[in-house]
Amino acid sequence: MTDPLDEIGFLAGSANRIEVLRTLTDGAYTRRELGEVVDASQPTIGRVLNDLTERNWITYDGDTYRATATGALVEAGITDLRDRVATEMRLRDIVEWLPTDVIDVDLRAFRDVTITTPTGTRPNAPIQRMVQLIEETDEVLLLSHSFNQQKLDTIHARTIDGALTTKGVFGADAIDAVSETPRLRKRLREVVASDAAEIRATTETVPAAVEVTDDRTHLLLRDEEGVVQASMDTDDGAVRSWAIEFHGRYWEGATPVEPGDLV
Image (cartoon, rainbow, N blue to C red; front, side):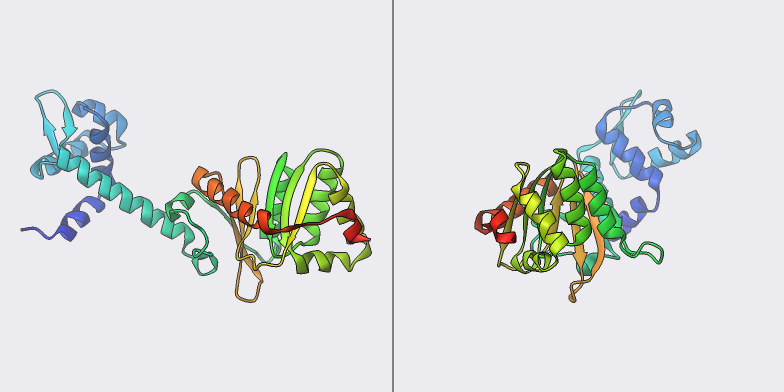
């Protein structure tokens, strides 16, 4: 009996085999129609059809080809494996900073994630990406143990002019740090005094910095020293649902910051 790994290698060794099997799992096609869907020559299509037929992964009724039940089973498995590996490749360079112990989402949800890392010319690129998303949204949920100046300046400018609604939870130490600088304290006081913003402080440890905008969910990734190493954002619905629930857990237990706390 052939080793299953040999069959996996056979299928994975040709993108055309996977694409033909995937196409025939979706429906019945003539050989010519397959040539219009799959970017391969007719001789290549013919060889692939012969290979798949030998394994009973597809069947031919004299006019069209379609996947058999076992062919569909194999296609589902190889597609799932390809998706998993594609996701791993996207996350490979940042996985050491990914808080997987609190992200209650299948990692395949991050397959199309946008990853931003510091560069020599843009050492603050992950923070700038976060600020960019705040600038492009009408509503934002924020959860972080820190409250940097760029974030505060952007929230202040857009909240005061009525362009942004904000619900933010920050570490109590971060609120205290902002309060120590008169200019920042004034800005934060004006933010919390507005009708468009609610800011709360938490004494709990916040294991992940999360931002939810109109259509993106953004996470800042820090190392063990608290230094930002990357950020990632996605429009995936499952990630968004997790982030909203995650923010809500901290929101319910946090203490509202009032203007009188910032004098």
